[in-house]
Image (cartoon, rainbow, N blue to C red):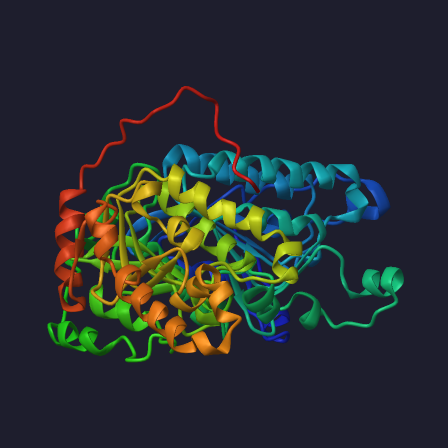
Length: 511
């Protein structure tokens, strides 16, 4: 069934049409539409006289990088992309079929919201989608692209999915729009400032990727799909090869290279002054395959770094503290970011490589009142629950509860390695001596003694030696040995199987 797509109407707004978006995402000529003949059954407010092609949403299956995907794309040129009962059923059925077919679902959201004339039937459509989103969670990856407005109840479908992509000057996400905000809170605010791409990438943490334009967005989606399993149990990303250009049975190619010059570069990563920050990405890039680190939520909670990478061509998940931002301290946002990524990787059996340089949890009334106890507990829970291979490298500081939280042996890490300058302790030397010798510090005459005790504490406790003696770390390694150790550890853990299975419905993560 052929339709006249209103491409010009979208182009006039600086946006692509629903069908163009699908064609950019999918391999050439691979998309097969289903339910194109679906129509609404609403007769209220003159709707019986309106013929809405495919009820405003194009649904079907295609391939990306030669592998099958389900995809839906809302068409804003058809009744503003509004969601009615049939519209919602089409999306819900697509997700249900994707679960059966074992393939990811990509949703391109561009809608004015619920179709008002349909009343509660429109809400039924949203409910059907949410239910299938939850059914699909941990079974198949779900990717949301915000390519226009997404407001009210509509935001909760993307909110339930695994990855959200936004586009500058196009994406809008909010529960209540600027008009309602003005009516209720007497505040003037633009759509961009309320729920634009930058807001959700930098402040709310709702979005994982922000792109300058739609073309970049669809390229990033295609790239992400090269890293992640396409269904629970899929081993393709772990076999060191990838598929390129073609349909279904396309040719597999080797996907591995590592420049040995990085072994020399990693020697000079740490600053001489242990109080100075550095970018942990330099460590990550010096360990994983060349140009393979694909960061997620790069603009949110910069004190933590998460993403995916390849080691010997095989996908791994990355979690790291970043001393170059807030000193790498854990706060509420960083805790949420880490916990969510750990749980995603565990869902799909993606091994975790953790780089630790953390002086503790961020102190102060603001974080305490935001619930740092609750948020920090998510990290503890996520790592403890994760049964995937877990490798931890302590590059420098690992203090107190944050040391425990960042995938220590005590939370089930399979291998924990520490660099020679690692400081594994309850707290830093200055803080410790301030408590241990508080009485002596009151007398200025004891200044030399206090400095001596501080040096003694640092020499005795601010090293990885005691942790090694207690069997808390697997080995003290030089920075240049890190790549080789990680490779060897991942090989050993390739067929890891958890034997600690308790009888329960599910745990109760402190959300």
